[in-house]
Length: 221
Length: 258
Image 1 (tube, helix red, strand yellow):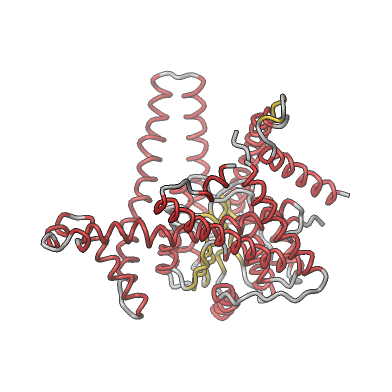
Image 2 (cartoon, rainbow over the protein chains, first blue to last red):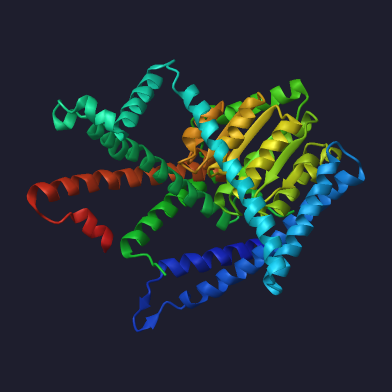
């Protein structure tokens, strides 16, 4: 019975969005009857998501609590987790409800001057990882690898003034910036679009399986 | 809100019909062929390596919420967990979206039970870190450094953190299999992982790993959909060429606006 109710709700929820999209905005003199409910349903989902955040936070706290209780390796970091979480909760609460200069200072210190730079630091690691990945990718081992390296060199040179300077005596169509633009706008875009089409059709097939509860993950014991 | 026009309605009908007809045919017992996907064949190889080394497996579901992509990734997670449990291996799952957490917990508990090793299931191995990309990426990279998994699976949707976690996995020497529909991240995964499934291949995973006729039927059905779209592209190109040469309206474009 539980499984049937879940499948029915899944089907009805899918049907709502499907019909809202398929039906025209105007049916004769009348507006699409489902469109006015799109916003309330969206808001319901946001509320639902709020509960889910609670589940996630709870799991995180339980996991760290167990780690401290059982004195597992690195348990001291779990204490840091609890201190950080409580400090941030107090800062956000005070800054929202009693926005005094002290509350503002605490919030700025924790969020703007600690959390955000830490996030930026992680993001900046990309530069290093990109360089190491590109170095590996630039090794020519196969014919495909050689084509990729040649394309990369053309595109890179085409983006900087030296590319134009090197080929400025050639006809316009043979100049590096033009070839680079062709690789990016024609060859590259065609490949990306092919991937996008495949993803779109695959997503539709997957959505049908989920909607009709044909997917294994939708089975309820 | 945007609504479908007649051309879109017709296309959706054709796509859905092609998928549903193939599902129906598969249910009737028709044998359907699916080509080999090296990335999915390598899953057993990766689990085997983790068994030899006696190290855990890390399976990331990416940034997606409860959407078709995450469901497709979950079916692979189920397969990996069931197989890993048979060999007594732990599977660590870092979670990005909190609503995914209870579904994954249920799935893994069931997978360990099906494999006959319910004692191995530990809720501590399903870890919600954060729903902020940088925080999540650093937590996943930290988990890799501490737990030293022998095999990493990156399935689902990813953003810039794809390279951070995949490069960290490579640094610790793990065998890595990625599958993503985030097309801008595909090149990064190709460079950093041993096997990469591109785009729609992720959706094919559940059908590929199971003998379920419904899943196989839908996979073959979606190929029919792709043929249909390709046909439309060819017709559109011919229409656009004629429109340019003859100075007439592109009839296929006009048809799609109808």
